[in-house]
Amino acid sequence: MNSALNVAKFGGTSVATYDTMCSCAKIVANNPNTRIVVVSASAGITNHLVALANTALTSQQIEEIVEQIRVIELAIVAKLKSPDEVSEKLNVLLDELTELAKHEEINFRDDLKDALVSMGERMSSLLFSAVLREFNVAASNFDVRKVLRTDSLFTQAAPDLPVIKMLSQSLLLPELDSSVIVTQGFVGADEQGRTTTLGRGGSDFTAALLAEAVDAQTCEIWTDVIGVYTTDPRITDKARPLPELSFEEAAEMATFGAKVLHPATMEPALRQDIKVFVGSSREPDKGGTWIVRDCKHEPAYRAITRRKDQVMVTVKTPKMMYAQGFLQRVFEIIAKHHLSVDLVTTSEIAVSFTLDNPPNSMSERMNKETLAELSTICDVSIEQGYDVVTVVGNNMHSSAGVSSKIFEAVADFNLRMICFGANPHNLSFVVNNTDSEDVVKVLHKALFEV
Image 1 (cartoon, rainbow, N blue to C red):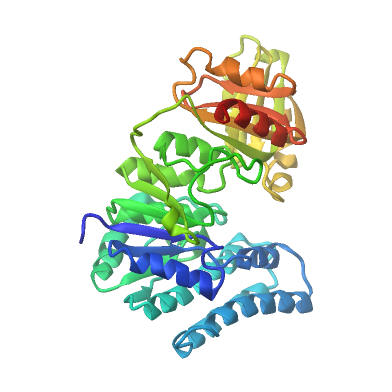
Image 2 (cartoon, one colour):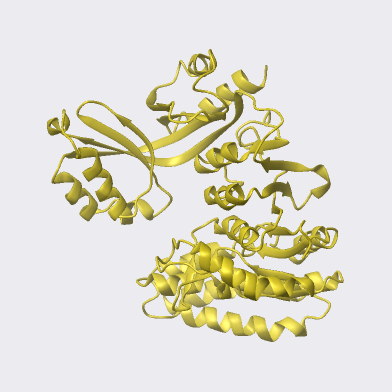
């Protein structure tokens, strides 16, 4: 196999319609090194599936949502030159989807939810392989569950790297000489063969995991923007695309709110030194961002991110003063309930930390049981309505004037919590969600528009 092997991933907006799929197919056809293609569900499909999985619905409501899904998928089929070759397989998937959606325990069992929400990728990969064949690309649809082994933590499964490597080398790699493999992002299977998912945004992670497993040299992430920007271009029109990022910078940006990449994507790339490209499937000729181990230029300020809907938890007790093991007990409880801590600050008798708060998860995960357990060792307070703004760059902890320039720019805003110095690549602070957009704008003006 060519040592320049490339894995390409296309997001939901890139495979939303027949026409957008054709744009993606041209990208694949123009790069003979692309032998594995990972696709997300067509835009809008996953939201419908999540609604079916998590909402108590009447039979009529279920049928209405399933019909909306069917309309989106069949609109793509209708434009295929040879629709008959996929119509029967698509109908089988739609029947499976309908059966899962109507299961009486769908709202209560995570294994059923994963099986249901995986249907979007299973359908889009089937259809995109057919579109590729229209562009004279020998393409086959491959079930990623054969190789992407995970644990059994449904909805947030963790990959089993050694097994993924072994299975990919034996089952996936031999197929690449004869055809381009089109497979599903976001989806895996546990040891018992039950469908699992990697969490929302996991298609990027899938692409990186497969690139690592087959020893690919590059991994392309095709989305609807021209690379990674200095900040969210929806916040300021002065944002500009970056030609390059280091793995560390990209990881920080993804972790603290940049939506272009899934935070875990950088882990396999960093382990195997896989170059990652981010570009627009709509405008592939405009270039994009290359993410590499070593950049030619490492500026003090690279980008600004915003992570919305943060929850700040403060645990406090006089017993913490000079006490050994208090922090360990606090974080053991947090870990036990599968909560992810982002920022942490400490004083002599209190610790504050932030938790990501995507819709519907906070009430489920920072639950009464977690609070009750923490309350046995300390007083607990929870505050919502915050965003985290992060400046990402290089050598920030050791470069004179870097932090002062940032704090001068945001002097008129209330910074609720500050984290700086733990690594050289970021300075993060918690602000009221009503201020965060303005904070990003003034920072961008001060750091990038001079």
